[in-house]
Length: 176
Length: 122
Image (tube, chains in turn green, brown):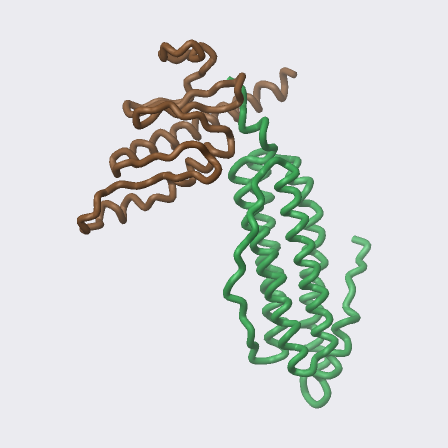
């Protein structure tokens, strides 16, 4: 008996489902960053707003990368429904704290898919996910560094203005 | 495992899984599956078979069992972009679900065997 499912699709139904969940997660992240960009802009943190616009665009690119991979491998990519985006934040710091939480949850979720692929010996998808793992190093670093600015600069006086000024300069150019 | 159907085509059909209520056969030549259930043999390609599985799994059997309204316990399994529709009673839904579960376990097992055998042999 031929393996007809394998003929149609390189990835298993389980991996396809997990990748589709990740597509949804990235779409959600992108929408959350967009909402953060709006909040920062409304509250006078223009540099941070630009930073979050860029992040929103990046998450969108991640989403498309996953989406196209699923299709290229013969799977069914599902355009996700994104709801429940938080629009208001209590403080400038809270925005960055939630940004880091968001990135951590994305890393965890990619680790989960990676583990599943290892179990199935789906090395092709593992190799594809390597790019995401490396990307998460940068994403988490940037979010963590932004929060660090709150500690080293402090929010008193013109602190928040200074923080906003430096958020755009955060870069990850590690050789590691 | 060759099917016991007396259809001339049946010689190329391979048993995937069967229960007392129905059976699923695979045709390698046509790259499709034949589902023998509720008095008809219906042809499903890969996408449609997945949709059928999803449609059957999505029926909330427990909620249907607990429902006390006088509506007939009939469920319509309609699959988008597929030629077949099933109009089934709750008992048939349970039977079809069992058939689908068994079928996909067998297909997965076949995948695993093929993967393990041919990765080394070819």
